[in-house]
Image (tube, one colour):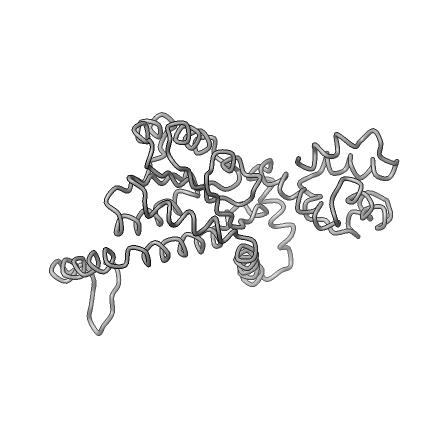
Length: 290
């Protein structure tokens, strides 16, 4: 149950001060998502103790849990303009480079501490045993899908990166998907309906669905057999994909370990091709893309 549903369920029984807080959150969730206790107190005109008791009244164990719930709700609702305003309001007078890099470090740390290792290993073995592998990510998530697809194509024979130009083309590319196949769906706020619907179709067709997303409340978790949760930044108009990319790196490395012989053989053959056709500049031991 999201924060708004909890407020709606409890509203009639709330005290006057708690109703003031409830109304403020409902009308200003974009700002409330980043308030601490004292800021809530000052903005709404209630005591700090009232703010803390309000969180408990809604069923949260502490204020920080309610704050995360507001953020979870807000990230699916905020427009790009709202995200931009919030970003620059928060960064005003701050060192942007330091602030952004520290924020990304924290996302990786949070992902490492919360990611279900059992789900990760299950996803790895499911992909390794798949008949065909489809990879789907739209908009900013397309970069992650292409990165994952590039490396999986070096390990597996039947990998398809789904072109996401239009909804109809997505279904045309996956309509043969079925039992024994795996589709990896990557989606972060604001979640793409194209991805959600395509994963639902794949699930209905008998394929195994692996989701890479930012939270257990993400719509793709409804169809995912295995879900890898990596923290993303909803406060910036630029999506932070650092933690998702780290999880995908780990996925690739784990799959490479399972298919070590095939990977050695593939790269051995590729090295000969790269040298023969001078793909890389190898002067003085350097190797870089042309």
